[in-house]
Image (cartoon, rainbow, N blue to C red; front, side, top):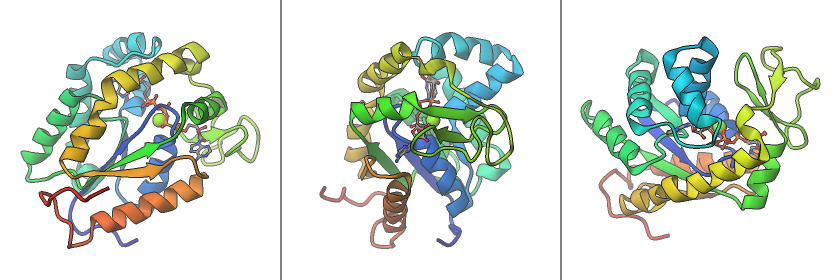
Length: 236
Ligand code: AP5
Ligand code: MG
């Protein structure tokens, strides 16, 4: 797909483990705009040992959301960086209505707007199977799965050679809590964006390649001149 000529802001919405991070990394390559993941920004802050990292860890370890105020400030700062001026693929943000309103306001200040919200759906059984086998690179954050997307060499990142680890918030208990928190606090965004005519539902049950192809089709359709922001929502 050609690089977008005007800024393109894509939101990936979906439950923990549905594949947002996996897909965002592929979209970053295909579209040439950065992958901005609030969870990755928090994990980086934890690695750096900053005050933000310490605060975020206390929530993440329990599977709870980090408070809106700090999350919004962190993502706004990231979106103000030069590489995000042509757009971004947002993964894991927004996660509450307050975050969604703050994002909209921040983009509007610069005459920008979200182009499309891609809502990736999968059953709880699928989510838990994906989370249980996930391995993440300690150095570059690349994501693998022991069965569905294994690294060439066990324990080692294909991309950078870094060590693979299992996220501390991937204990069975925290996984379940993250799914509950998603249903209570993030799922309302589905209707929020549907009402704005921005939501496209994506079947997340397929292989990584199948989901990627469906996402690319939806992005292509959202760029069609027939469908501009502010149009009436499309019938589903
Ligand atoms: P975050 O890091 O965003 O975690 P999450 O939403 O719980 O989502 P995950 O990263 O677990 O799943 P994913 O959808 O990215 O799936 P992945 O691609 O890895 O947030 C962590 C914590 O940070 C939160 O709990 C909260 O405390 C805090 N936080 C973050 N953002 C916040 C915000 N905005 N506000 C407040 N707090 C915030 O895939 C999962 C596995 O499945 C991988 O192993 C992958 O290889 C495999 N896989 C992917 N796709 C497929 C497929 N199609 N078929 C087979 N396997 C697949
Ligand atoms: Mg993720």
